[in-house]
Amino acid sequence: GEEKYAIFSLLTGLLVWCSAVDFGIGTGLQNYISECRAKNKSYDAYIKSALHLSFIAIIFFIALFYIFSGVISAKYLSSFHEVLQDKTRMLFFTSCLVFSSIGIGAIAYKILFAELVGWKANLLNALSYMIGMLGLLYIYYRGISVDIKLSLIVLYLPVGMI
Image (cartoon, rainbow, N blue to C red):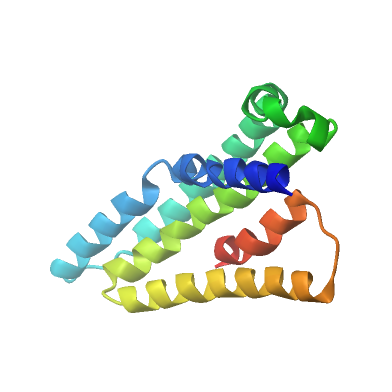
């Protein structure tokens, strides 16, 4: 009902915060690639470094989310304790993981934009959201009962997978 939609909306709001897990690596990489392209230089080393740094960043944030999920979720979702029945920690942690994958995946979009094929990045992004929406529609029309966590995963994981 309405309470579950409110929870879904609150958790979706974490997307913006969790997209910061790349520490700006994507934007910096886009700038370096653009500079290298202008000077006709190779930028493979920058991409490799960005991948290493993003791997470290995601491991760091997974640990951080795991450690602090209980405390943060208790405050963030405090109005819905009865609805969630002590599932707030895992729901918050799972949401942060899915949304962090989107933040790290955005680095690939920045690479495409820097290579002047931004239309591909936009197309991939639109397709991944469509896949997520089709997944939710499939669940709805098949009458499959899913919880909030699975709904978030079905909708947003395709975006993070790209």
